[in-house]
Image (cartoon, rainbow, N blue to C red; front, side, top):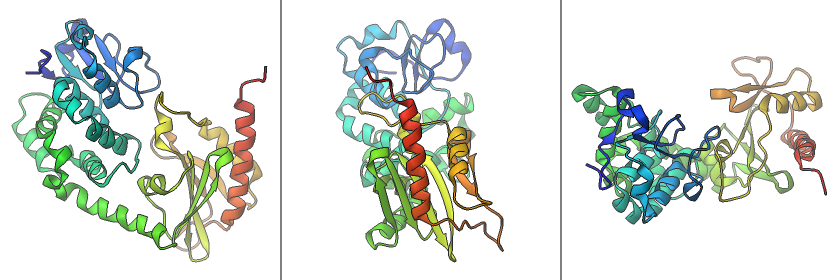
Length: 333
């Protein structure tokens, strides 16, 4: 039982009728209280708005009149499973305990949703949080699904929430989930330390170009690049593989810091292609929800390698963003 009278986490729609639930990291209609940070939902009360859903939940937890905001809610709800989401749910169910661990919660949530390097322990926790619900790799998930008496979502949330906050302090308890990807991340960061990966910055347009001997994870790029617009140029056999994406925090409603415009990727690709110096190389939106651009080229052997030099690529990106930012700027008074 929650210290504020909530019964627990639920995804069963019958438990949500009449607005008797707190929505975290999601924006369903009719919640008694919403604590989210997503675009497309504006129901989070102004005093609780934060860059992270966990941050919004912590602001609610710190409110002396937090019970008033529940308006009779009985359950906590989220429509998806991720690190910031299950941390926010845990905060709402355990507000006093969560306030004592505020810094740990926020660092772990930012490492999860924003891919930011907020400390070794937080990153390990974020990585294990990405795998803990997968029964192929996680004993917690296997046990939850084998013993469940509720739906899959409820069972998974309850199993993970039972492991908190111990995992925040001791992610080594589930080292099998984070060790391999974490070691790979450290290896990628070492490329920067040894000079085999380098970053060219164009601060005026918040652009970073990372040149490395292979494509790197977003976490590695975010940890070493200053820009909000991230280009990768991975060099193979005299050619390059290119990727572009925005820094992940730009995909959320940010309230604590200035944000860089995230222009539509389809239009960005069209403008880049119009100015691209090498025929036969074409930028296209790819990935989950078209969250990145990739440079498509004709296959040569087993790989598709571009011939455009990173210096030329950097110039085209810089000029393209200058034009797009100028168009998006508010008119002078």
